[in-house]
Image (tube, rainbow, N blue to C red; front, side):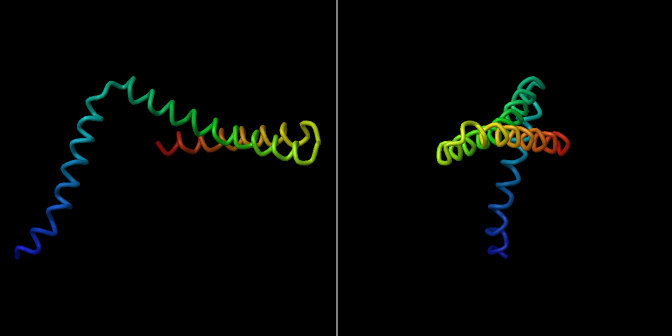
Length: 92
């Protein structure tokens, strides 16, 4: 009987911590929550765009091709980032 209670303690503690975090999040003003979401959304768009730019620049440097790869990979990264952000917004 004591073994069951000792195994339940970590679960109960995790539930209490999650409830406390949720309570704190509920008390945050809507502005703070929205700024957090905007930050996440921004990074979801910026990171794939920068990755496309970096890969394109690397390919152009290796192949000595001007901006032949940089421009299209930049646009592909931007499109992927916007699509990813759109999906994230609709899941929220």
